[in-house]
Length: 226
Image 1 (tube, one colour):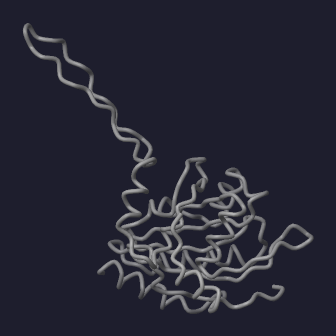
Image 2 (spheres, rainbow, N blue to C red; image 1 turned 60 degrees about the vertical axis):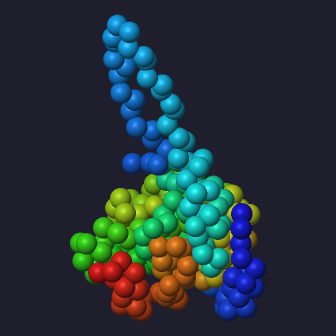
Image 3 (cartoon, rainbow, N blue to C red; image 1 turned 90 degrees about the vertical axis):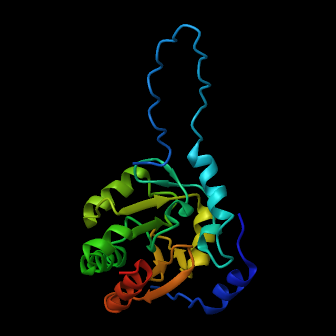
């Protein structure tokens, strides 16, 4: 996994301290073989490429150094499918981090993201992907992510994901999100919505809850050319 050193140290310097507080893996169906004609040479059949194995490498080679998509750890979405952030390259992405057991801040983050989605024109909305990544590696199973999706009313333009604890911490550092597990099992965390451009570079940030949403929408319209 390539993480640019400049991005790494700049995020450490600017991140505020927190006080308490249809899958790409589906290969196309093979056509039914035709009966061999007399004297006809049988065509050579090749296997379709495994896009989940090869696509990330191809995408990563084209990304700018500042791209978050150099974080190429495998995550799991709320359908149980393996995903990488680089799967979303080529479109504007709104991303935040959360935990499904959160009683207030995380549902509010999702609510704010939905409000942004509702302000976009149909053309722009179709281009934008909304992504939420859990930092509760122990409790946020696929089933919990599914329940949270239903709770916040997320549509098919949203992807909810979980990952291994070390990978989640790396992603949080890259996004500028800080979190800490409390003795209760819940988390103190910063509330940050980040907009990524088509190459995965950070184009806009909204810190806190409620407010600042027009800036998120404006960034998405600009990035989508709408």
